Each structure stands twice: as structure tokens, then as C-alpha cells.
Length: 101
Image (tube, rainbow, N blue to C red; front, side, top):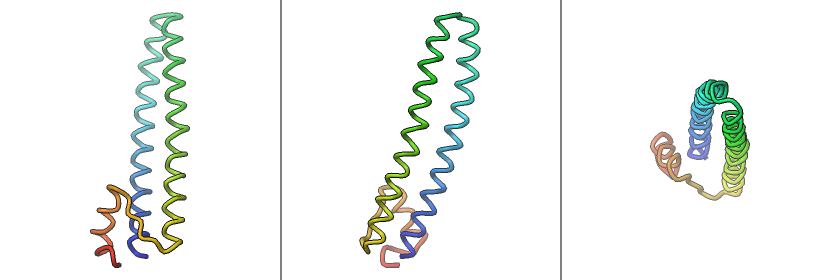
């Protein structure tokens, strides 16, 4: 039980880090594309639109993926199954004191 709680906390911390990185990348790309679009005219506008669409899809897909993983892990833990996520699970085992905790 303790393992699943630690794994959940580590997952949320990783999610916050991913969000911060995404915001920084989005802002930097927005400034770069905005400057390029104003310098290039209509061709820059098309490139800017495509980059905006890609950014929108990333911001749509990643939260849905996070939610799906969260629900899957919660159902497994609630069912009494030991479910260890690939990278986060190893860290959680170290912090929780092993898989039997």
C-alpha cells in the first residue's frame, strides 16, 4: 500500500516537471515562430499555424495519456494487484522500502 502511494506521488511530481518543460518549450517556440512569421509574411503564417496545431495536439494528448495511466494504476492498486510502472516503480520501491511494504 505504501509503495503505491509513493509511486503516485513520484508520478505527480514527474507530471509537474513535464508540464513546466512543455510551457517553457511552448513559449520559446511561440516567440520564435511569431518573429519568423512576421518576417516571412504569408508563408510564415502557414508554418506558424502548423506549429500551433502540433502544440495543440501535444497539449491534448499528454494530459489524456496521463489520465489513462493514472486510472489504470488506480484500478490495479484498488484491486489489490502489485503494479509497478517502468521507471517510476523502481524509484518508488527505493523510497518505500521494497515491494512488500
